Image (cartoon, rainbow, N blue to C red; front, side, top):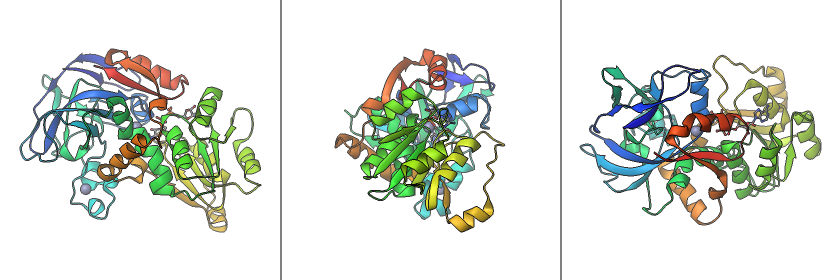
Length: 364
Ligand SMILES: NC(=O)c1ccc[n+]([C@@H]2O[C@H](COP(=O)([O-])OP(=O)(O)OC[C@H]3O[C@@H](n4cnc5c(N)ncnc54)[C@H](O)[C@@H]3O)[C@@H](O)[C@H]2O)c1
Ligand SMILES: [Zn+2]
Ligand SMILES: [Zn+2]
């Protein structure tokens, strides 16, 4: 099958034929229907995040089940599925305490399936699976718990986006911050994920939603997802601007959704005393943010990380599906560009080049 393979950081993805072995026990063979263009893959491509290489990237995906390995009971051939980049073991401390997004076995098996082997290879060379999804390919073999079934007529691109940016962004607002009605919110970074924090804040009836981005086009786009105010840090100090918009206090909730110490500090400093700062973006490895420990105490801020929207993917992705079907989440409007798999390097130049909304590969 055809796949886009990353052999080395800072080199283009190579579109080529590689082999995919059949599913083993508890695994599912999926024909990929759509794959979203998320910055997390770009971090690996740029060497900003560590990952075993070579690898097939792509973690925001959906598709149709082709066949299943022994013991699989949740899905059958022909089912349409959202792919989760944190499939769960069901037995570890975190799975048992309702935090399957932090599954220990998943964390302990990076780049492979749960049994520490890959189904992807080229001849004798092992090729790793990013997030146990690896959807920048025509097909994938994934753990059964990484398949979230949706109706057979549910659109595949929208399903793919629920696989990462929707659940990550809306979940950050809903499950992590638990935004209360009427509160003030600032979102630093309004790309695919940040737009979903913005629309999550709208859904939760936030009073003010301040979009912060260095790109004017993206700020304008964010207004269509529920932003009530915009701030461009290239034009003025974003912390001062957010304080001005919140009666001098700072925002009740701030979100970092780009991935850098600089934007983390913007979010941290723009939160009011007692406010909550949620970090969603993945900063480059080795980056450090200087937080004043005394100010942290005296201002009683809460600084939290948020992985996969602090969601329980198998339970909460169907919630996103329902919110979309009820017209309460705009996923159609997020999709601004579609590509063929062989245009993937262009798709990544576009996300880095400042195009608003989300790109999706729809032809394999
Ligand atoms: N926590 C998770 O589970 C999770 C899941 C998915 C993605 N992520 C991470 O979230 C981040 C965002 O992903 P994305 O796909 O939305 O990326 P994106 O490139 O679509 O969006 C990032 C946005 O940040 C803006 N930006 C850049 N510099 C800025 C600055 N100084 N101030 C304000 N805005 C700035 C960009 O213009 C862009 O609009 C990435 O780091 C990604 O790896 C985390
Ligand atoms: Zn993602
Ligand atoms: Zn687990």
